[in-house]
Image 1 (tube, one colour):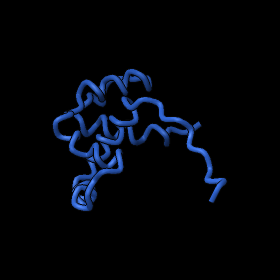
Image 2: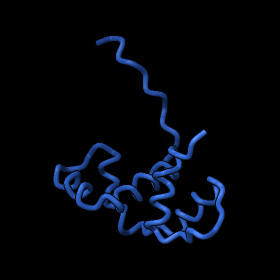
Image 3: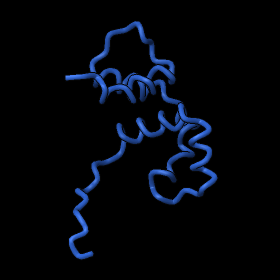
Length: 91
């Protein structure tokens, strides 16, 4: 078992200002990140996740990778479960 799946959460939490000297479980690190997350700075990336973003917003995400990573992790932790995506059998 490796920690690779936790790397985005750890990086986003560190960037959000979560105390790196504390010991965390996955759940407590996620909670600490959500408490420290600056929603007003990352909520403008929501259209990227909804499929309604412009090219300019996509370009902004590449210019602000730390903010985009925080938005992505926040979305992963708070979004409702999506239905299973089925393969395109009819195509």
